[in-house]
Length: 426
Image 1 (cartoon, rainbow, N blue to C red):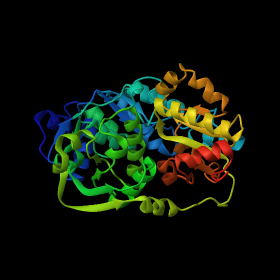
Image 2: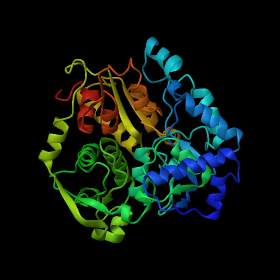
Image 3: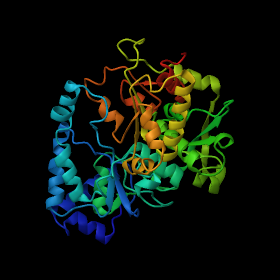
């Protein structure tokens, strides 16, 4: 790997032993993937995936102390993934005991470490850090050092920034050094599509379901998706971006997609068209029957498959402002149609702190509250990791949450029916 004199100096200890360790870690990481050089991180802000003070992450806290003591702090301010708990989200005494005493007992001191390392502010906790209100939206072509999979795929695909699917802690390492290894999705060749996905559905496909199908088929490869512009249009407006946010999260969690191209819509696809498709690309056709097959084959891992849901999560990744407004209207209409005033199942909508603040300035906030729905900024996945929460029959329209937990997936219309009528067929 070629290193500039500045980079070689860091590796040789020009800025101390700790910074030399950081640089050595990045070099070794790059060598594993055949990186030819290190390139500067050019984004204004970074994003850190490890936001939770999990007791099992004790080695991380020692690492953070070493970095802070040596002054090897981030060269960028950064946002972080969501906090893991919220007192407003339903949990019984024993579940709360597990959360606060055994799982996330290090949350407060860890957040103090994050502040010293360069956390943007008290509200900088969201997996959707790229939402306008969060203040961490990369520009096209910027080089990032991120690890959160749903954020990486959005930044690469919708924003046209460049970032590999890094592991946790490697994201802060790149930010501290100011350099990341040049390989994979940072290269022009690595951004070419090796799959052509033809969407031939008779109606607009569910974002989370289509993303799941593509992710499971192409795995870590790059897909070039044809036929979606029929449903999404050719401009990245709020509706298209929200749809792509959820779609990308499903491709990244149900597979390992770090970049997708949507014909006539995403930046590189609009600029370069089919020249983005590599020679010998495979073809995957998705029609109504294929999506039905994909959903039908999801495993149901509840102890009782016929149990009545005890909790519903919507917002993984975090919901956008427009999604909150749309869901509020849909829930109101669903309740009115069923003659009910409040939702039938305890339901939590999750969003970014800055988005919640904007939402609370509108009349939608009070309207949503009247339906009985709880608005939170937590990570549903971290909630479900509680061994006393995992066995609960939880439903969701998030394929990411379904993949990593015991939550059961339903389409958005099915979720709406469940929470406003008491069942899918009610």
